[in-house]
Amino acid sequence: MLPGTFPGLNRISGFYSDDDHMRHVIVANSRGEIADLQYTGKANAKPVSVPLGMFVDVISIAGFYAANDKTRVVIVATAQGELFEIKYTSKESPKVGQQPLTTIPNLRAISAFYSPDDKNRHVIVVDVAGNVTEVWYAKQTAGVFVTAPALASFSAPSPRVEYVGPDITNINKIAVSNAAYSSPSGRCVAIAGSTSKLHALSDTGGVWSSSNGGTWSLQAAGHRNRPGAMAGL
Image 1 (cartoon, rainbow, N blue to C red):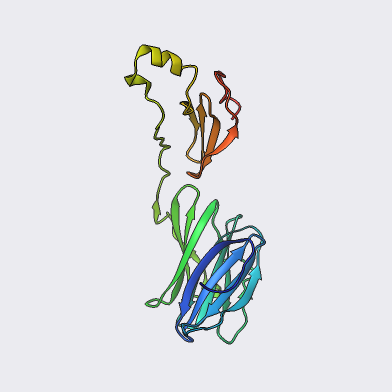
Image 2: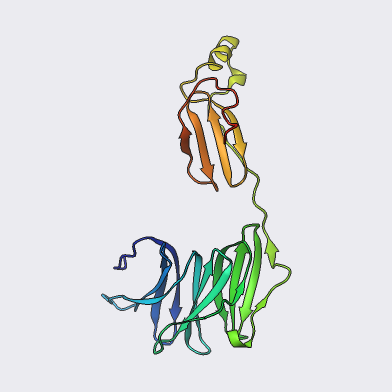
């Protein structure tokens, strides 16, 4: 494990710089602070943390090494869709671009790399609709280009649920009648929502919700036989 503590860390990337054989771990925290944790491959090498800048509403970061001018490049994406470039070398301090490279509406996440054959920098962007767009440039002063249309589009999958509660289709009529009023396993009686937010209502287990395919959490305690209990969600 690398030593170092970064309170509120919520974004991470990494790359290798060939000119000085350094490993770089790029981190961002909830306050928008960006730092480069640098270290070598030598045994017991002590990492050094280099502050890179501070941004508002950071939602994604990416980094790479540009071999043509021996530059370390970090791309910062904000909630407003802006892409900012931070660049520095082993001898020069980090410089933050005063203007964004470009703005991509509804941006969700990014990745980035350098292509040595044409000496271009590339930022791959995905938006909330699943569109994948490439932003590329040699140097910001030489112009920044954006693919149109998008490279590809990946639509969100349809909501899917797997029910593991009592199956009332294969039990006798008396059991079916009893299950309508009481079920110790919290029999699910309704599901509603969208691809980003799902809600499940159980007969005795309450209302549960899941965001973006994440862990289900209890929203309301169980109440038996409450018609329309989902209406308020």
